[in-house]
Length: 128
Image (cartoon, rainbow, N blue to C red; front, side, top):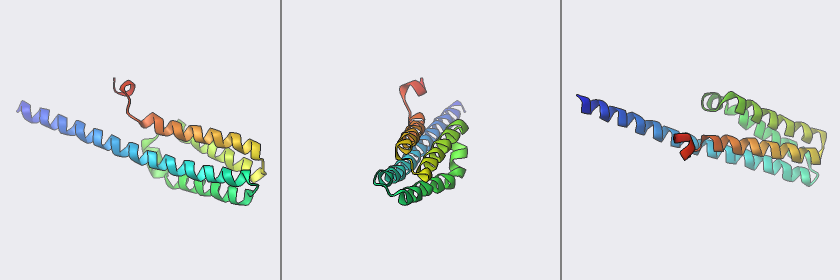
């Protein structure tokens, strides 16, 4: 009887580990996609094409909004809010045509996205 409980516990732990690894991989792909779109938006802004930059940033905002079902389950709300705010800051600066301020907002968004991804990765500190 005890052996069945131990096996069940090991199976549950393995399922949790696999689920965690799948989540990390998915979040990494989301982060990479968001970073790519934001970087493209800044490339357009630096080239002076604010119309294209705004369109790219709007694409990033729409993509982020589409992830709502995922983010509100797997990501802490303060991180969601901070990333959303950073994305809106970037959009605001691009709409205003402020390339230098947009660079700062872009950096802020990048840092939030990289932080999101980093928080979810398994480290010795997060295990022990």
